[in-house]
Length: 99
Image (cartoon, rainbow, N blue to C red):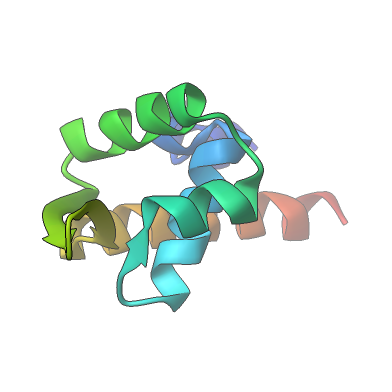
């Protein structure tokens, strides 16, 4: 069982980061407001988790203006997809091993 635990990625241990990555994997691009609404988080909490995923190069951030309003969007990187899928595989193997 320890082999499965070793395959877990610390970047995805938080339920918030699991949620962010899950949403980004099924949507090409998602804006801050949609993520915040879906995960029901404060701006600060959301921003800190997004910053951690960006620092790990698992997501990209695009800032632009829509009219006069700022709009920040997020997308998962190829590296992020690979890392997240490996993490999910490890979780699945652990679950199957314990059932």
